[in-house]
Length: 305
Ligand SMILES: [Zn+2]
Image (tube, rainbow, N blue to C red; front, side, top):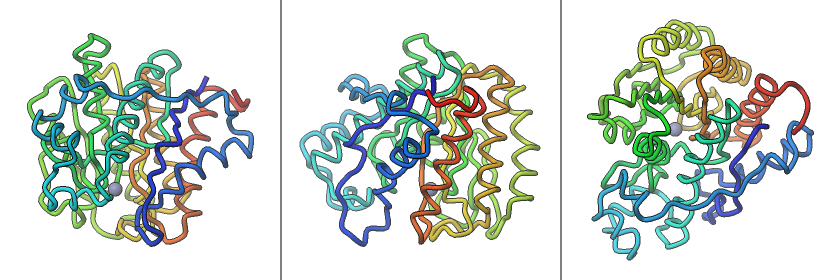
């Protein structure tokens, strides 16, 4: 069945006008259940990272600063959420959820985290709404425990996964593919294994052409036994931060393409959400829900559960 990591802790309390649409973490699961795409049986409550698991990827100094709430003010501000013990706790659950999704994906073909995709977190610092790097931690745990040998990260968030690129720079068993806006945050980009920079206003047709011209070759040549897919919806034309021009249908076609590629190659895929900042939260929630609907349809047919 479609296993979905969900916890109330994902929804962090932010000021009313904060640009991060925190409500999406409850709106997405509620909508999917209400419409019958899934039932509450699909959800699992994730565990949290142990300190050793954090240290698989992050530096001891950074972890100590988080643990003791002594992160320098400037570094805390770069994260973009109020730094509290609850924020750190939340990050531990989100990242462990991504690891658990990978294990469930190995069992069922696909699994999804309602949160995650914190690809701007580096080994020694966080930024851009990211405290811990969930996909890198999950990847390192899989590799360290012999649960995967070659991992492909498909990061289609509109922002470059600079943390992924930096953390995995010297790890040949992890291939980081990031397709993102060239003229967008982070303005000083890191080097992924493959970066594709898109022009502002790139629309559905061009976007899908580039993706379909790239992904099959990557999967073929690298030969992953695990895929992490960051299915962010900040590629939408309605996005306040994105600068691209995808429609809801285009975004859905993107997700469908990635999932069908993974499924036909018989490679487990763990999906993490990443960003989405459309003016109307409806666009964000609907686009994310499409990813869940597709996963349910493609892997498990039309039936709930
Ligand atoms: Zn983003």
